[in-house]
Length: 253
Image (cartoon, rainbow, N blue to C red; front, side, top):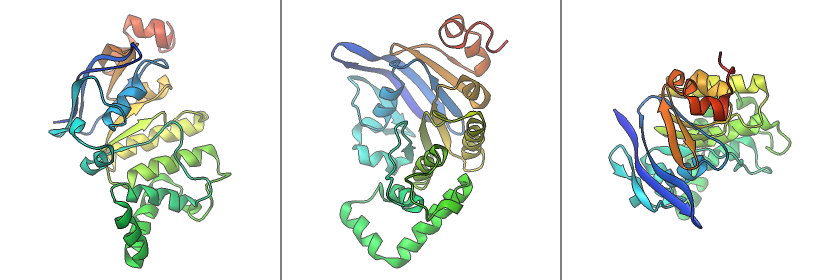
């Protein structure tokens, strides 16, 4: 079954081709990773899926819905959530309140205000948030202010805020960036559990090639806005252009 379908996507900025005929599908229940150097088009692609950018040509469909016909705030309504490489957290709110922001993404300002007035609704949302935080192992930090917390904790808050919207597809943008080796291992475990336990399809952008190769079902390699190869990890890591540009001759020997 096909979840996400991207066909012939083109996007350019001031004559520079950020995306040049990109096409691929992400199937339900898989971890699909995008890799490539900075400027290869990964972030632009995420921004097109979220409707932060409008491609000049091509189509994006999710479970039959044409995403390009939606407003950006409606993308979460069809089951797509996203994290950001540059964290979108609020330092002087508690971890719990930062996570709760994700529950309000689909609401108008008036609806959000009404829900905050409703004690019962607030308690229900807090319960949901704590469940997500427990899943990620950060529920003991719920009442602490985000400011001053370790970077790894802040990264998990970003993921929790996406998960509380109950997505069917999550876009993870560099979740392991800035992490040490142990933290990266934990992030890899969490990504697998998001897919295996929560049943959420994962579209991953990540620079850590060891992590990508270990957890991905399929990988797509972008270079200057074009796909140079896509396939399972073995196919990708043995491709000559990938070895030369990203992996080095003996990285996975």
